[in-house]
Image (tube, one colour):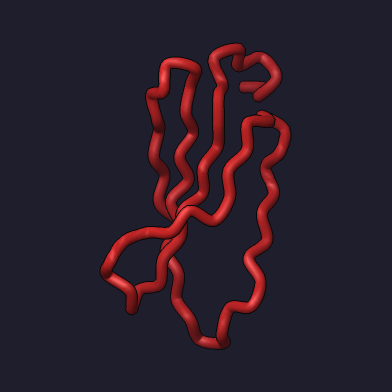
Amino acid sequence: MDPQSRKDFAQYVLYGNSLDDTTGRTELWASNDVNDTTFVEENISWGTHRIYTLVTRDFLGVGIFRLY
């Protein structure tokens, strides 16, 4: 589905954490623009393993979670 046609879109939020850090997740990026879909994380040490969670929220605050 074309993101432009999603009239109920409110926000993207990207969280990330290291596999070594079990204390929780850190918000890395957020956008209220449906077309803003690019984030580049810099300064990651070689060999670091990361887990990313992308949350897409609608105007009611309902979120869809995706793990990467």
